[in-house]
Image (cartoon, rainbow, N blue to C red):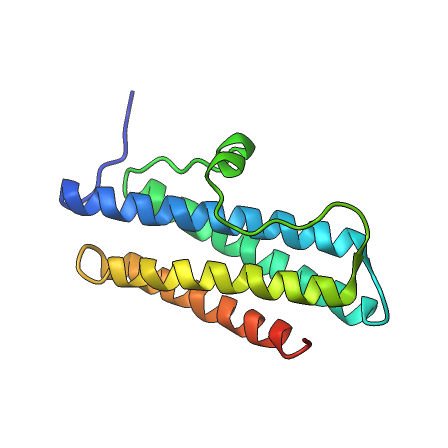
Length: 155
């Protein structure tokens, strides 16, 4: 059976693999939670928030693929299975049922903040072992921070 090899040192590959897996879990869960809020949203700001949640879903899905493909390119197998996401997520969860627009703004703001904080730690962790992967994390963090700002401004 063929495998993918990397030019990274084994220790660096381990760190990068863990960072990418953590980012993958955060982004998969973000896409699921933003879609859950999108479906169950009610309130005066329904339309604009409904559309913004779709932007967040698209961002998360795009970067999920980037993180997973980077991992594979380095010879690390990403694990985005629902059981893995459910077991390993650190993302705050939403309530079930209809969600009032103000609660969605507060919850998604908190969710984005928690993910951004972890992404910034991941960016720092990659400075030495893999600046190429660090660049990918910087880009997604920048986009998440923009969404955090836009959501937070609605509080």
